[in-house]
Image (cartoon, rainbow, N blue to C red; front, top):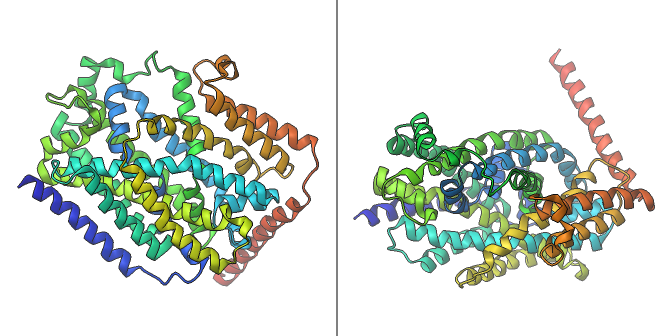
Length: 497
């Protein structure tokens, strides 16, 4: 009976998703509509699109377990999420303006435009695709775990994984960016607003409240409230810095920045996201922080959130916890699948010189292909997948140097961008073979050290080599847009008088 109640809650959530996505559907007759929703989204739709692309279902499993086992260290998730969104607020204006002016749909489009090199754009497309795709597989595998846990094992791992993932992939294939964003809106409301309410309820049921929980932890396990020597503040700081910059370079985030109807709507979305995200992330991790003190808490802390929901809220709460985790995973999967498909059609296959109509057809087909391949891989036993994930942020963060500095520093050129990024990534990938590359930095990660080398090389090589003349025209576009904004504001003021 309990399993039927939990399954009923989950089925109801899927029906709600399907109905709302269907009601918001538009014909996908252009690449711009399929990839970035025709650049027409209001701030709230874009906001939940950002949340969906950013926050993952693994928060309810892996990070929850880290909070239970490592304590305060796991809170770096909330801190780097906040830092990344602040950074995004600083870059969203030039990204959106150039996107609108030059029909950009991916991060690789932006790299190609800024550095005047199709080869560099293809390089960014391939590397960010490779370093981001493991997250797609992890999230699909997470869904299998979530469905099994939330249904008391009634629905098997692989069956839940396949059914839910196919649902997401099909609506992305049919509805493109709009379906992905509308789905993220529904899913985001559930795992942020409703999810936070449930987590607070469970916290009071399990511990008697937030303050009593921290008192219990301080008395029984004070080591959870500090950064332990085994982890070190270098590792803690690296995790925050690399997460903030690396997360911002995820290809799905750039597509979300192109989706809004103007710069103001983009800034509204990015400004609100960190506060919503930080609140629900902190409360979820706090629920896990003291969970090890609860009698009967499972040895595998990855299932701890579901155990607490069942113990202190019953099957309805368990079903809801499953829905929240599924919502986070589904929105991440939709963003990753759609972005990968567009990058394949527009950037990775760029040498074929496809028209925009051909690119649309290829991208739609790639949505299905990428999704089905990811599902197939996720059903396999992959022992080294987690170790691969460890390289993801450290490698993808290297893209931040040319992408961010290139938006504000006119002197940066393709030579500095190429050399700096390649060296930064090689430092991460070869640090185990050549430990002297990073050993001097103590507990700071290879990604942090690679980022330092990357930054130095980007600046030095750019200064020592020829300036790219086309860059002036790009920055003139930004200045012209600023003048247009001022003129519009002046006209509006005069009309008001």
